[in-house]
Image 1 (tube, rainbow, N blue to C red):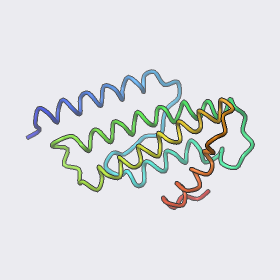
Image 2: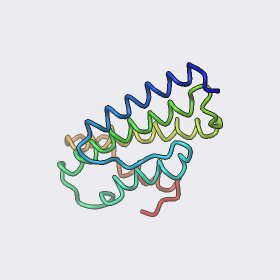
Image 3: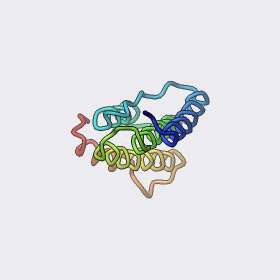
Length: 138
């Protein structure tokens, strides 16, 4: 039986996710909350893969930043869902979502800064580390 706390956590997270999706102009990559190791990195690659080591304009980075912001919302939902009492998710899945959430948030922030002409942090260097860690083809 699902506890009231689990139902409330899931409902709040789902409403936040739906609100963000409704506000989004483009469809964001779907995330499978039960499979963070495959769905999270694949979604990041879908957004950043074509931009990596390419000559991109600020407008392209700004669009990628918006997509990443929506991905942060989806990752937040997954993180909240798997951490909520009664979700049945293993502790390992919850930990993986916490780490992915941090990675995706960093990408969103770094790409946004680069789109604004602030290059103190290089999103491509972060993406290279991420791709190596999750064994993505770059």
